[in-house]
Amino acid sequence: MNWHYDAVSANETPGKQPPAARSSAAVELLEEVHRDLAATALPLALPGADAARLDIRNALAQLDDYILPRFRSLDAPLLAVVGGSTGAGKSTLVNALAGHAVTRAGAIRPTTRQPLLLHHPDDAGWFEDRRVLPGLSRIRGTAARDPLPANQAGPAPGTGAVSSLVLLADAAVPAGIAVLDAPDVDSVAEDNRRLAGQLLAAADLWIFVTTANRYADAVPWRLLLDAASRDITVAVVLDRVPPAAEEEVSADLQAMLGREGLGGARLFVVPEAALDAMGMLPPAAVEPLRSWLAELAADAAGRADIARRTLNGTVRALGSRVETVAQAARAQERAAGVLSQETRDAYQDAVARILEATRDGALLRGEVLARWQDFVGTGEFFRAMEQNIGRLRDRMGAFFRGEPTPAVRVETAIETGLQAVIIDEAANAAERTDQRWRSDPAVRQLLGGDDLSGTSAGFGDKVAEEIRAWQGSLMDLIRTEGQDRRTQARWLSFGINGLGAALMIVVFSMTAGLTGLEIGVAGGTAVVGQRLLEAVFGDDAVRRLARTARDDLHARCQGLLAAEQQRFLARLDLSGGVPPAVLAAHAAALRRLAASA
Image (cartoon, rainbow, N blue to C red; front, side, top):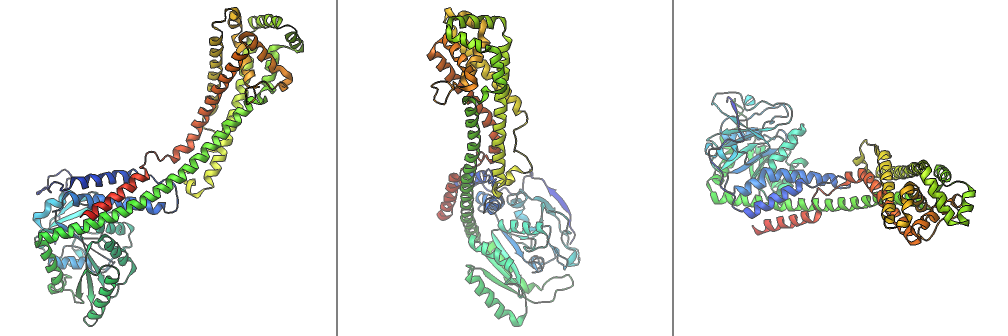
């Protein structure tokens, strides 16, 4: 047989268009299930996650390859996939069914690499438009009846993953049924094994080929048990059976099928026979199987019954898969919630430590204290403040008008000190979170090779910018508070930076209850800021200003660290996925759909 191939365009109009979908509600549900499964994220390496991801891939493939196409075209020809173990004789069987060599058979393994779909010429339109197996491109095969050795028939094995399906129109195949020769289910090539599973999952009917000495092998039985779970129609071909052992072996295999829920499977025995010069079996060897397929093809109601039975079983199995995915998604959601909360707690603790450092007087030491003392003067100034508040106002006013620069130096020192505290606490939170994540095998892979144990690039600049913005907001508070105080207008005109510096000092020396000052801090220098502000605005106003300034600082610190924690939380983000409850509802709807038919 000579082979000529022409690519079939995906946009080509087939000779016969499939009918419109008969159950729009079912198709709509299945499309929703497909969309939501494709959007389901299982990022954590929890127990069972790998299996659930495989379930998702297999479910999506089966929806694409079989369930949706079949629901849309219930009266399309049946697809009978011929599968089995290495060397079981699948290709020889297909050749015998066609009555001439159409596919490669030989001793070199793997043999079947390019899947071949045989169909009646009148059924070409059902398969050319990728109704089933849409992920495989189509190649037309044109057969010529030239005598060729059987081991040269069919497409030559290629290399790499197979991405196409050979279509061969042959009048020897009865209209209403197509036969697909699949790769070995236990092939030495992983791509072949994967493709064999994909093709079997797209079948309405399985023709499973095994041999007298291998019918109990584990790999075929795993697939047969899957067929039983889907309630698929199965024909088992027991190949190369010695005449003396036919009764015993077929009885044993039939008993095994019954024990595994496949008692209804048809069993066909192909006796051991010599192949002719073309590598063909005697026609009589496969006549029972050929006749059975012809009867199915001629019985429209019988074909529809097989299609619906397989479809319902596949939908029921899909519902179980979706339920498994829903359970895995719930586990992911719970684990992600715990980890997210631990991450947020680490950064909230950092915010709390920053605020504690700003109210316990810690920032009123070192450079900030030195610049503040430069600004307000020496002990002689404190004595003058205690003796006469009026003299204090005059002296401070003159100080502000003459030397604004020291107040700015106080602001700069506060910015530097506060920046150091924020960066240090943010780095500590990042290090603790990074260590927590890396200690958990289920989470470690989310970090990959990235080092998140320190602050993000440019974080120091962001902190400095936020502190300056906070300081600017304090100046706005002071302007707003003093705008109606005409008697104190000169304080606002000449001492806005000084008043702002004083307010910062008050904020950094307040107790948690906002009830007073840490009088002992830095020798009482913070008292100067409070007394000065009280002289200008009054006691209640000072407390209100300090509380507002402190709340603003709290909010800005929270914002800075919330942005930092997103480096971790973004890797845990499941918001783009589908809620487990939606998946569980899909699983229930699929079970109802299968039961209703």
